[in-house]
Image 1: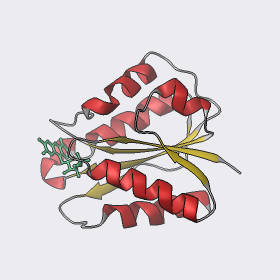
Image 2 (image 1 turned 90 degrees about the vertical axis):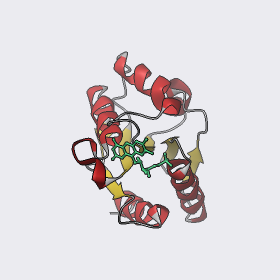
Image 3 (image 1 turned 180 degrees about the vertical axis):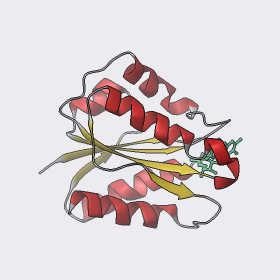
Image 4 (image 1 turned 45 degrees about the vertical axis):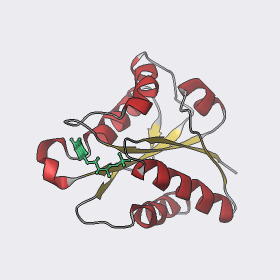
Length: 146
Ligand SMILES: Cc1cc2nc3c(=O)[nH]c(=O)nc-3n(C[C@H](O)[C@H](O)[C@H](O)COP(=O)(O)O)c2cc1C
């Protein structure tokens, strides 16, 4: 069975709520899933073969501060060729050009480290979706049980 780690990049808590709900729902469905509140890259990737990143976008396409260290560790050239991953990108389409920018940046950084994407990032638009945790869970379940 795969070991799933889930991390969140958040400013106001929505992405963390989604990540925690995902972890609980996956555990309830019989998966081995853990939410890591302190997303230190080595600790997280040492304990899993599948990584789910839930991240909102802040500023103008920026990664939330609480995932900055994780992102820097990716940019420093981690080797993640044994890792599969998926990114749930929370954003707001009124930001136009930077819509879900952080999710896309994190996806690209993971790919640059050799990790295998399970899919293109899932974009969740705060303008349209009231329960992002439901949308994320349906998507992740389909990825894990194709
Ligand atoms: C100051 C600020 C800047 C934002 N910048 C962006 C952005 O550049 N692109 C985007 O898609 N969403 C942007 N958003 C929307 C958030 O990503 C979205 O509301 C998200 O659901 C917030 O999740 P969080 O509670 O986990 O931080 C911004 C929101 C705020 C308040």
